[in-house]
Image (cartoon, rainbow, N blue to C red; front, side, top):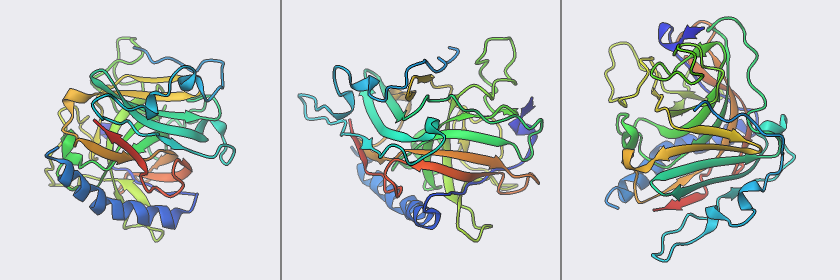
Length: 296
C-alpha cells in the first residue's frame, strides 16, 4: 500500500445542487471565519453492527438537544429527510455535535449501516477513491493548527484502501503503520474552491511548492492542508462518531456546523489539485448553510 506522502495533490466536486452548494461554501470561507473571530474571545475501530435503527442514540435521552443548568446548549442537531440517497450507508438522517466530558462528539446517523460501503481498491494511488463522512464547521483553521483564514475547516471520517495517510498510527495493530487506509479514520481538512474546474467545485487545499504554511503537529507530511490526529472513530449500527479532545482545540465558545457524505478522487495525473470531491451523496442541511449550532 502506498503512503500518501509519496505522491502529489487532491481536490473536490458534487452531484446534488453542486453550483449552489459550492457557492455557499465559498462564501462560508469568509463568513464563517469572520464569525470565528467574533467568538475568539469567548482501538481498532468498531465495525458496523447488524442493526439499522437510526434512533439508537435517542432511546433514553436526546443528548444532542439538551440544555445545561448553566445555560450551555448543544442545539438540536440537523435532521435530514431519509430516502433521497443511495447507497443508504450515506443517506443522512441526523447530524449532531455535542459535548461529553472533555470531548466533543461529532455524529452522523444514516438510514443504512454506517461504514458498510468502502472504496474498491484500484491497486494504485493515482486515480484512487476515498469515501467520507464530513462535518464542515464555522471555525478558523488556525484553531487546529493550520494557517489562519486558509479556507473552510472540516472534520472527516475517511476510508481509502489504496493508500495510508496516518503514519503515526497502526490502526489494525499488525506492526505496520502504512497499510491501514481501508479502516475508517479521522482527518481535519481545509476546503477551498477548485479554480481549475469550470463548475467551481471544492478541493482539499494543496500546499504549493515553496509554500510554508502553519500546520498541525500531526500533519502527515503530505502536500495538503490535511491533518491525521488519530481521534477515536467509531462506526456502529447507523452511526458514525468521532471523539475530539476539547482541550486540544482553540475553538470559539460557539460554532456552526453541517454534515456531508461524499466520494473523493485522487487526481490521476497527481497534479494540483490532488484530491477532489467527485460526488456528494448527501448534505444534512440540503444547501451547506451550516445550520447546526453548538455552544460550550
